[in-house]
Amino acid sequence: MATSLTLTLSQITSAQRRTLIAAALGWMLDSFDAMLYALVLAHIMRDLDMSKATAGLLNSLTLLASGIGGVSFGFIADRIGRKRALMLSILTYSVCSFASGLSTSVLMLAVFRFILGLGMGGEWNTGATLVAETWPTELRAKAISIVQSSWAVGYALAALVAGVVLHYADWRMVFFIGILPALMTLWIRSSVPESAMWQEHHRLSQTRLAQESTRVAEAQQKYEHDSFARIFRPPYVKNTFALLFLNFFGMFAWWGLFTWIPPYLSLPVENGGRGFGVMGTTTLLVVLNLFGMLPGYTSFGWVADHLGRRKSFICYTLLAALAVPLYAMARQPAVLLLMGTVVAFFGTGFFSGSGIIGSEIFPTSVRARALGFTYNGARTMSSVAPYIIGRVGQVKGLSWAFYLCAGSFLLASLVATQLPETRGKQLQ
Image (tube, rainbow, N blue to C red; front, side):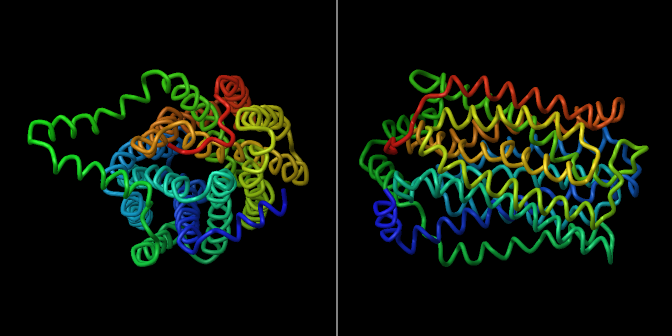
């Protein structure tokens, strides 16, 4: 087994490595820009006089936009290519992160965070599709898990940057640093190849259109546009909605937790928080990401190759459901650190499986759109999570509100039982 894996790794081309790096960096910087809001949320609430409910609503708008962006960029990626769609998504979220620092009102901030969400949603499915179509079957799960794990690195980096910058400046400067990911598009444009699978599919489609009459060509274009509807018909429809609702319940729990964990740690005890200072909160979040999320994301690909996709989903989400209540009850820093790491490991690691199983369920002609719908469509549905958790936290306290997240992880585990097993499947 080890010899076979070593041989396969030795056959990976430079182009394949560059696509993996591009998708991973794009997702890492997506996380960096997206999570800056949660990390400075306590400061924004104070300066713009926002309640927990309003603060949660703004992040809900971002998630709503990410769902719209994911589906929209899926169509864009299927039309103009994975590479160009990836570049456009990165430019969108980085420019709007910078613009968030210019906000002088809640309305301005809401507009910028909404547009940021469009790019945030578009990055995931374009990057995951690019890697899935480029890497060999036996390494696909591990490669996509590596891409997904970069979210934890971006979150940890954002926590470090926010902690340092807030020590010397205000929250606006934190957002201004969010423009830096835009520079990565220059490297992608010059060094990252387009998916050969997409190019071949696009070339054949264009050749057929050129050879046919105008009437038939129009019919072909309509077919290509309507082919997205195939994921809502047998044999895909059950899998489409199973993956959609697994992602939805998992994302409701994740965004409900991780939008509010930074302010939960930093807010005063009398306001429902844990009273940690800036550096104390930063330290906890960095550990939570590097020793919880990062190995959780990365490990899923290996676990999925051994246990299978479906059993891995069930295992991770069920253990997350059991760990969240223990985290919510914790009071001591050491216990918060330990249980937070466990929650982060299982409660984020399972997301690696969405790109893995989604790319194996759906064919090339609709893969990016299908991944966009099942992942970012779910993110749209889960956009209510930050608002609901913030609203409940305002009335009953955030620790009590986190129990809702545990219940959502449990529902995700139940839905996972309806997924097919796709381990070892060749892409079509």
